[in-house]
Image 1 (cartoon, rainbow, N blue to C red):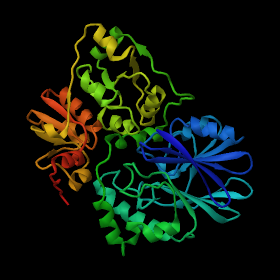
Image 2 (image 1 turned 90 degrees about the horizontal axis):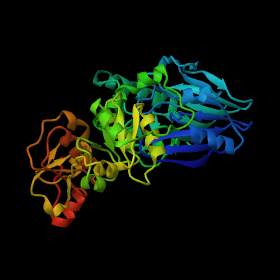
Image 3 (image 1 turned 45 degrees about the vertical axis):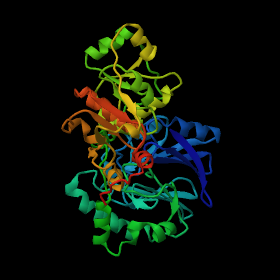
Image 4 (image 1 turned 90 degrees about the vertical axis):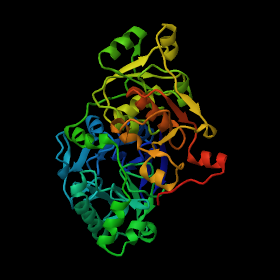
Amino acid sequence: MESDVGVTTPAVPVLSFVDEGLGHSSYLVDLGDGRALVIDPPRLPGRHAAAAAERGLEIAYTADTHSHADYVSGGPELAARGAEFLASKGADLVVPHHDVEPGDEIALTDALSLVAIPTPGHTPDHLAYLLCEHGEPVALFSGGSLMVGTVGRTDLLGPELREDLSRRLYRALRDEILVLPDDLAVYPTHGAGSFCSAPGATERTTTIGRERATNPLLQAPDEDTFVCQLLAGLGTFPSYFSRLPEYNRQGPRLYRDTPVLARLSVGEARSRLERGGLVVDVRSIADFAAAHIPGALSIELRPVFSSWLGWLVEPDQPLIFVIAEGQDRADLVRQCLTVGYEQLVGELDGGLEAWRAAGLPFASIELVDSSELNTTVLDVRQDNEYETGHIPGAVHVELGALPEAPLPKGPVTVMCGHGERAMTGASLLGRRGCHDLAVLAGGPGDWSERTGMPLETSV
């Protein structure tokens, strides 16, 4: 789900667009002369274009702060519509763009300019953009460097580089960012819900002064402490993060509008399955539990759909979707394309009812409540969630690691925080040959409340 929230600096109007599932924010800046600048747009920037048109603005510039790993950049799309695409020279982009080097100042209007501040760490090529009016700072677009209550993760290029990048980030923040005025508005690209950041606050924007006073990582007394604290807080991140930087470097296929999914007959869907296609069932976990196509992968359509699709499915896998009436098909396509999934064969016309009406087999998975836990419990939440509190005796495997993990001995009840990830996990286990499966409706808190027993912790 995407949303937009207007935020205004003392002099320059800024419109904020938030993808809650990816924890991603992008920005439309009114330059005051009928033109606009967009910072870190998503692959399908139609909402940005519509917002600009509503305000009588032409998008003249689009700028990426760094090589994005969590989503496909919309810079090339806006460039194809006439904007000048600004990107770090260090990103080595193949797609047409204007190279920006650390320290460059780009004149946007007679009054406004954009200064590129070197902030390596989250990525080696990272730039923060300081918006100035008549030479005075009015806003900082910090990308993946400084965020609300945290900073960008520094391990996206592998463990061998993470310490060096953490030290470079510490120095960039100290020498380039924290010297800026306390009341300067800060607009990060990553935030709550993003796998690109260390754990932080839920707000989307901040100020230099607030971060100086309250950001736990900025309270570190020295560089070594900062590095240790930052690296200790990093969890796992989706596997597709290793693919998208190169995808963005080469430049994505352009889509003027969101494509419409084809409608597949039962026969067409079966034919594509026989040729290596994968059924992704995006219905609610209750619907999937009641009946689904054998071998289907359950990923309920919600704001974090794209993260789990990217984590669990190969990008060249042809995808056939089972969708319920009323679900947002445009949002489904947008989320797929946002993380670089192009092989969208279509949706099963008539949904599961058409499959059943054709007399074809279907499967089910039992949804149980916490009073029925008399099996092995498999907890598929992230490490930090499990460590904070889990059902005693639960086996723990993160959902992202489940496709390669040893198969548990049944019967097994899969659980997460609410049930959606657990159903995805159960469907993965079903594809691998486990059939004595159930899914817990709810999470560890529900179990503790019902049984009156405390959760175990690992911290």
